[in-house]
Image (cartoon, rainbow, N blue to C red; front, side):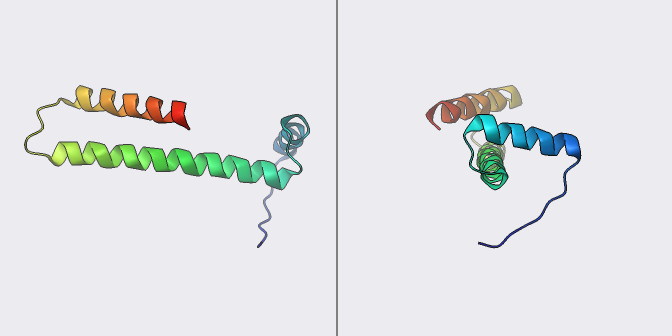
Length: 84
């Protein structure tokens, strides 16, 4: 697996080390991979939600308001979060 080095200020390094020790991670690399995977999943959910909003906005038959669309998007995001 290729490596990537990152520089952190001491306060962040200390935080990562604490998270590793209390969070059941074997190393700081495992912790960072977990954070990145979570952020990746979050970004994918946001992109999917935006796609649905764009589709709804472009639909000539859609009579929902922006508030309706936002509420539907939030409802779907919460639903997905519960099942993830």
